[in-house]
Length: 117
Length: 113
Image (cartoon, rainbow over all chains, first blue to last red; front, side, top):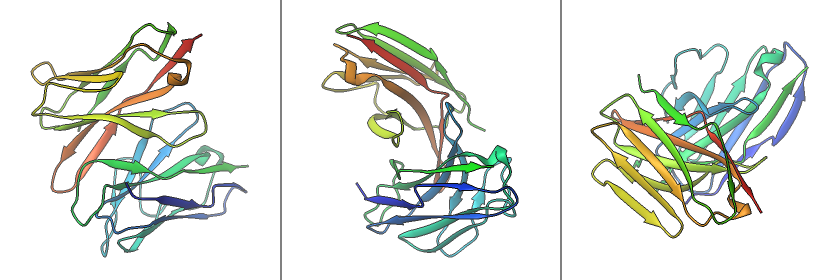
């Protein structure tokens, strides 16, 4: 499986500011996803990051709040904009198995723990 | 859209006993069902998966069964060990020209030594 890294691993931010989270994969992958996991909760899909086009957002998530970039097949960023304490969560990047063909098996990055004061 | 329900939310077993976690899904077009284990403070790790053309799959102490007609699938862990203690998530994946995976709410498993 691909090796996935995320930066930062954690951050504490003031409300009203923005944070950009980076996801780097050591091999090319077709599908990249961003999830949110609130404390003690399940994984909620925010959006699918599409290479070379706009991300596809799930219901309840909008581009203005969570802009996403996917400039190539190994990298994506998620920005949490105009943060409020309700945005405090773990944000996880996920990728498919890679190898040049899209598969439905997903692997997760280590996550970014965000606290908004 | 797809909805995945998972039960129980918490499960406590004695070491050596079996543990069973059950999930149901709503969209009959879902065709891939992975299970993830998440230890405290760590990322979810894929432990086993099953596709809709298979009814059962086993990997050592872990097995998964799928009933497509009833739209439910289950995780079975035998001979549980304390290191099996974690949160387990079931998921259902739908391929719509790119796939999307919906997760259950999770089951917190405690294995008592």
